[in-house]
Image 1 (cartoon, rainbow, N blue to C red):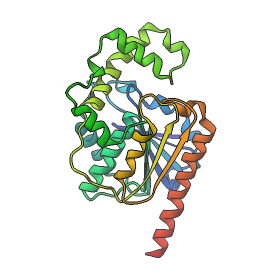
Image 2: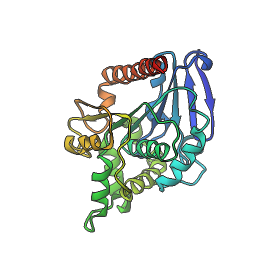
Image 3: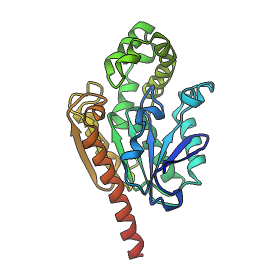
Length: 269
């Protein structure tokens, strides 16, 4: 039986009794995305998983709220809500912009000496230092300042959007300011310091992603003091839609590993 609990910043879903959850998976959406990006994934995860979808303002049920392009403000709010969600081991998954927010959230947990995610899974996003260096270049073109028509073409060419929405002008008109806002968040991001996190990092991506090359993805390895694992799928930026069975299997195995490793650590203490 599916159980749903909704807070200000997270929608939490469990297939079994919430009290029996063993691992909590936080899902961070890409630019222009919402909880619908990862719709129904929780049905394929182990039954002991509590899946937490980040609800960003200005979209979905929060469509009437102002958009936020400052990553620090977003992380502030995530941390405030997460402080009461650290009773079981957890891991982060973020795709594209979501990878950046997930990383900064893990970094904030580390700086505040809060419980850390057992694993950070980053997908389809350049390593933070590489993105930051690009953003600092004077001649770097900021796509969030692009004309509406150019931005619309970028959205349509990224993939990941059903054809029925591509021809829906009303839907695209709603999506445009959200996507522009999220692009601004990514294109104004600057990394501060050089902190390596004491957690495992999995790096995922599509082998034909035009937004993040394999080399740019593998730069994430510099963010961890622990184990780093890489896995690439056939496809572009939204590769997981074309490899859903293999992708979900990978995430489910990561969830299982977190549960088993956490149990081993508890026994050894």
